[in-house]
Image (tube, rainbow, N blue to C red; front, side):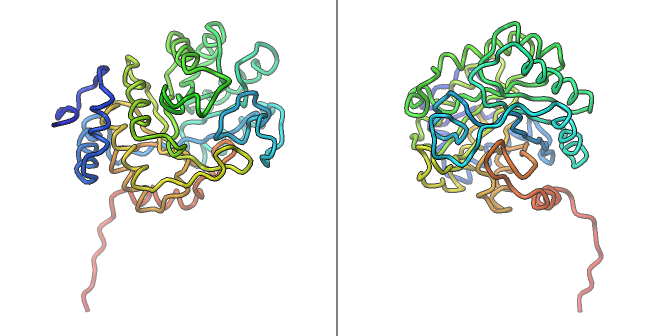
Length: 328
């Protein structure tokens, strides 16, 4: 049976079994298909650099099994911190811009947005990032229509709200918020005219079918999310998933490739877990359709690749200047 579309057409009617069939293709065939689709919709040499900052860390009331910021996991090494001063955040955004990032993402460990001084401060941060000439993305938990409109009016580029995993596996990872509530938040954001940044995490004990079911849900969204971060679990001490084995890099690359085929026009972000990949494995993920990385030493609270290593990595994706060689 043939899986997928030869012309890379954007579809909102994928079946889970079709996506599983793609995922299980011979690896080189899968990457080849993904690269062909990638070239239809994107510049194959363009890798966006985004920076991610935790603007309010720890004390989150959600019980996400992977997250060291959850107040439910009392043996993690994180301490609860208040919302950062907008002036400090914007200074860090400027530093990120000057280092080469053109997207600045801000995350607050909240279950949901609450009106008041803290939300007003986030609005100030969004405006400030946009004034720096950067794209602005935030992840703040659930929000209502009025709050989404305020963010849109401030110039917010995208709102991150990941599905995390499949509807079927979701309750094994999170019990304090339903999968349906996540979808409702996405609808509110899209209705406000803000781009969606929505992906998930692999390597949490889920099956291949779960991974493909998550992609099916993402592909059902019409239009598809503009940005899709694919994360591999980075086990954190004190969380229920602290002792889960890190996934094989080929599994990570397979997920990138399938995501590219199922969501052809989306920016696929090679996100958490990238620090466990060597340079060649990351380049393979770019070949398979990833076209964005998070640039900086940290992803909210987990380690990320070294910035100088990333500079060298991105340099390796660019054309070489011709140099005359001498044969002795």
